[in-house]
Length: 113
Length: 113
Image (cartoon, rainbow over all chains, first blue to last red):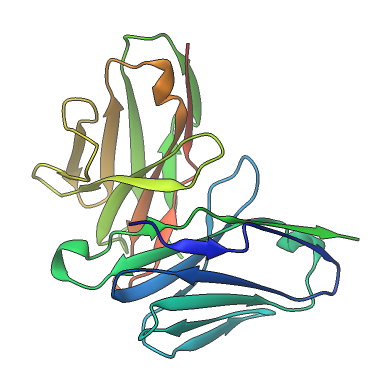
């Protein structure tokens, strides 16, 4: 079953912050975050492997609550280059799901000057 | 990061024909996958490409329609057979590294007329 992302779309001014949420109905082993610009392939942002883990990448960070099967992506002091569609990909716990990612429907982020 | 290449980058095909997409990954990759992204949609896993054996297909995808080969660790092909306009999509291969990170190739944009 596909994880649910919220919000579906967000519009920001440069310098503003945003949070994108990803919620799954399944027990998760990992959560992956990607950004895709129009006409391009998804670009890897980060992977979260442990419950309660939080990671950072420049002004973009993420958290993973294993018990709630939820992850959030935090974008601070947004830049024009942050515009794109953000996808979470979830890897379910369990041997047969190893390596397989199920993607949310995506969140369209638009940053204006 | 992993270096992943695909060819062709795009193609326009007539219905009823077949197209084979090639994917080359670097030696860090341990698992290879094929995804489909229909216009304006999220990514959907087609199958896991297994080295030297039959691919593992996800629900809704069958070998007769999407035959996949992986003759060695770093190369895989996906064939879209007997194409119809509904097959118009972006087809992406991905490679998973030992730590779990998964990178995507640049994609093959397919239009079926």
